[in-house]
Image 1 (cartoon, helix red, strand yellow):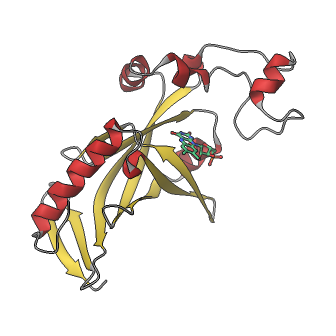
Image 2 (cartoon, rainbow, N blue to C red; image 1 turned 180 degrees about the vertical axis):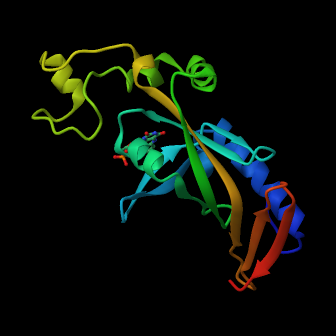
Length: 196
Ligand SMILES: Cc1cc2nc3c(=O)[nH]c(=O)nc-3n(C[C@H](O)[C@H](O)[C@H](O)COP(=O)(O)O)c2cc1C
């Protein structure tokens, strides 16, 4: 439970714990987050699932399909913004990140080995995400023999988003608290309060 009595460090520690809960508990509000990327000059956002969170490495990891538009966008311009919100904890976290897409490498293979058969299913269809189809879904197109299946490993990718800035907003009826955390190139952390 966050509190207005917390110091800047305590707010960061509490956020760390909440994000770890988000990884482990699919019912936790931090299990999903929104990531915004740039498609040329146009902003695109989407919800993804938090698969790994490591504060020490300042990394946020999600799984995706290597063929998806977000992958192309993040490869063309790795700068991205990540947003978490928990109504029950009254906290919003906004991260300024640089994304690295891992595909068929050690990290990708390791994360793939941790996935369930059900999770792997999403990556098995031999039609790329965002491709128009006549059927209602890829599952239906597959049942109608319009598309085939392939190994999920062919399409599975992991996106590691590394951040140097985190902005926390804690909502409280007496006073909202907003803190900006910055890590320099030597990983030295500074934090300051901002007007909420
Ligand atoms: C609750 C929820 C969780 C999602 N999780 C993921 C995810 O972990 N990875 C992913 O690639 N897409 C996920 N999606 C789908 C994306 O939001 C998005 O619609 C899709 O990936 C296409 O994005 P793009 O066209 O920008 O690449 C999720 C959608 C919802 C609603």
